[in-house]
Amino acid sequence: MTHLNSLWLWWLAILVITISVVMLGILWSKLKPLSSSSPLPPGPRSLPVVGYLPFLGPDLHKQFTNMANTYGPIFKFHMGSKLHVVINTSELTKVVTRDQDHTFANRNLTIAASIITYGGQDIVFSNNSHWRKLRKIFVHEALSNKNLAACSYFRSNEVRKTIKNVFGKLGTSIDIRQVSFLTESNVLTSMILGNTSTVGSRHLGEELHIVSTNISEIFGRPNMSDFFPKLAWFDLQGVERDMKKQLKMMDEIIESMIEQRTKLNSKMSHDEVCDHEEKKDFSQILLELKNQEDGSPLDITHIKALLLDVMIVGAETTATLIEWVMTEIMKNLDVMKRVQEELEEIVGLNNIVEEYHLQKLQYLDATIKETLRLHPILPFLMPRSPSKDCTVGGYTVPKDSTVLLNVWSIHQDPRHWDNPLEFNPDRFLTYHEAKKSYNGNNLNFFPFGSGRRLCPGLPLAEKMLLFILASLLHSLTGVCPRAKSMTFLKNLVLHSRN
Image (cartoon, rainbow, N blue to C red):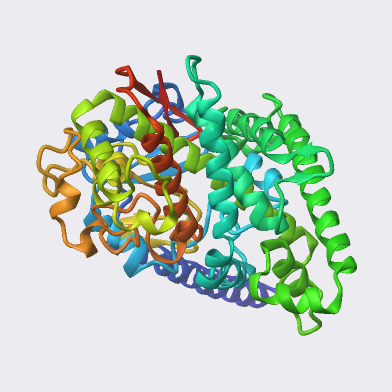
């Protein structure tokens, strides 16, 4: 018996030693990479549970620029349980948008964004394999040069109606932002439907403006459920409830548009269909792709999400920028004088602005770009989220963290811009084309993004920005009053406040 007990204890000791060695080996293999890996970026101290939330102000782009002076060009902070990393220089932006573009291509889908995009089925927020296919359809089909040329009538018609409307309100105050939004949304809905911006007796532009305003307001609320996912079920601030109401309204608008296009297609004769092949509208292109039987990436939800992107995101950003440009021009009367002199020379006093004039309006184009430099519509672009742990600037950026590119700070970096706080359109007249292009290759000026997430609607946005602004400014017969403006941050979108 004593011999058996000794033998048992001996085997037990061997087993314990073996297990200990194995566990130590596993532990060493886990700890060794951690000890040699890059540390997290520096950053401010945070409070337990809430993180840095109580210390964040309304002008985040300015606050983060000041924080970069303390912590360096890349720093971190927590908002609740969510880690955020802010990048403030063009050199580190290159790592995100070029060197590791594939890793940083994902979006951070908030609760509000998930709802209004049908669960991230659109171009802006989608992370799945459909995203590249959707972008290809949008850029190469809907916004092809042929289609943009075919839709020139819609753009001219809506802009002329806007100018007529403005003249009819002489002597009264005019909401430039609303006027611009309605013009852009009417152009977009005409391009979507093929020949009209109405569905039955419904004026879609007015309805879209109401819904867009509500959506922006909801996005502007800091949603605690995004920072504390365990609280999402309670919807404490009503963000989920309110956004679902707006989605229902948008759904009704979009379905009415799809229904109208479907009925129109069914009534078209064979000759009309053949004639229409050369100038298909956006909804027709999408519906035809949906009906293909070769594994099309589109279903009705994708179509709805794409149309929502076009109508809300496209009109909202264009209207906001036009308001900013008008504000800067009215503050700088010398700039206004030069813009109007250019319009008089290129267009003529007794003529109306046509699209073929736009490429010759170099000073107005420079004025728009200088406005975007000082007032990027999205001062952090759309937040990115890495698909795996990676290294930026010698620091680890963990998987699924939220990465913010502080474009506002980069656009005013004194290392790359002379007198960066001065509004000076002339700087864009002296730069070579590569430096002043919107294509995102110049990472000192990339208001519409860079890399594979470059704004897909850029070709249309460029045309509409110049067209609406040139037409409005050409119609002015006197000097506009000087405007007072200030900035405030709402839903990561800069607005002008008169």
